[in-house]
View 1: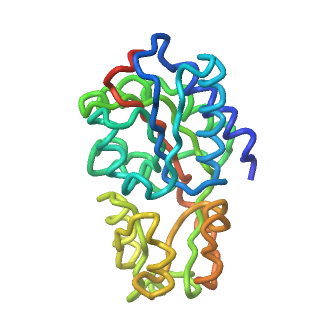
View 2: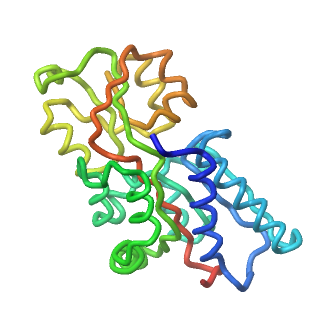
Length: 250
């Protein structure tokens, strides 16, 4: 697909480190991630931790908190805005109720299909790091980087080929009005569920399917509770690296 763990880790870490504070006011930083240990997000966070601690000769330590440790993704963003934690990495779909303008990245078929072009847009767009970041700053947050974990696929308990196949189908979505509207328009019943609860929701039949890139499918073992992988090709999973405002001037 053009995306590799090494590429994502290098690109995202370099972007965050390039914006890391030059003056240190805290010795212990908290970095919350949405995914589990061993995931792409975790590789990014662990590389960031290693480089920060090396650059400061250990004067600054970075504690990485994986999925669910400090709350839902939306809750960790709120904690960052309140200065309780210093950094968080979340899927942009979890920001819809906090920074509505960010939902533009959830529109189907928005980003180019070419990975290199998408990466360039997400890492260097003047609009993202200018106008959109200004909206984040109004909510007490700073956008440090955006990157894609790759094309998303539907993982479902039955074959989906037409809108009619979505009848009485509960599709798990993130907490985003645009995502809910998108799947409602497709004919499904959009059902918001925190990422850490999706496996159980699929297992118990509370939802009939979900959408994520292949790495998440493998990491969370969704293959144990669904029967189909469907490439709809409608969007990338865009990840946002956010910094808290307090004590960490850029």
